Length: 289
Length: 179
Image (cartoon, each protein chain N blue to C red):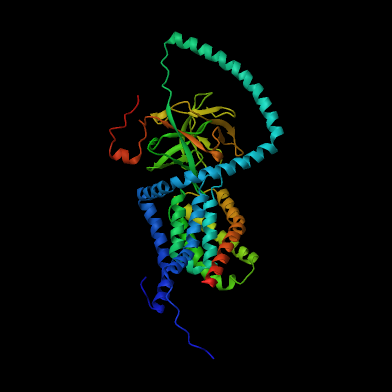
């Protein structure tokens, strides 16, 4: 260590705070000016910590499971009643589904219908919350066995959860659909009206930009739209609910507050490409028609 | 009658390593706590709560081991772990550090309750500054509910974190007396 005289050391100590505060403002400007650098350093930190998070996720998961177990036991009675009611309803739906399936098969035979290929997906573990106070995002652990690309969709076991926005070598960040910056094109299944699902950081994203005269109705099912070939069509998203302000919102199927595994859909991205790819077209990306 | 003894021998390698480890404990444990707080537990504001409590406590009770540079580094870590515009955590934690240094002479002598009360003020200012900076840097008004939740979590979590850190602080003091 360098030996400094005591007055000099005092002066340095007194100077360090103002200098560092100036550096903090510098960091802010840098973050505004060079978003790519910030993104790279974020992914570098995430890659560095991904193994740690993967290791820590086991005990944390155990604690969470224990907590939810206690909750389950407390609500056992109501849960049973609810399940019984739901089971009855589902039995009726099961019968209806079988009838529809048979009818569908018959109609397809008559039309020589070529079905859409089933989208391919890989499953990844959610290892960290990457949002913060004003953003909704999670970190997934990837690896050599799981290559993800920007723009791919992430679903939990029930429905759409988010999109891949940043990719590192061992981890990737998923911007959840509830985030303020999330915009997802959707279709209302009943009326086939297209709309935009806009995140507000609250639990339910809002619907915007539906065609005039096709007001979303309470209870409509919302699925992804194949608009601009960015998404596979028909992935389940949620159900329309009219919010307190009278604005239609989407109650998501995905349980974003307890994500542990996400399915990443490998969908050929032909529509909106990430900014770098626009500058240098990547020959390996073939638009799927 | 004072007797002149032999001059104390220079501290050995182990003693120096020991002192170094002690000096590193505050920033390293705070950083580890922040990293663990980013694990998906369903509380999005846990990370800044841990960071603020760590910087405040150590700046107050062990300022030698929490230099401004460490506060800067912890702020940067908070920004890189989260998704907010970068620089917010750096600035709020640095300002917290500087302000805590100013009041430490009066505050360290007070009871835990008063320190907590002071921390409430710090948390209010830090969360408010974070909210304003977020609004300025993202150029849109962020919703206020998450900020209130963050404030509540930051204040409510402090006693637990302070208890843990006080234990570490006492243990280090004992070790220093022995050394």
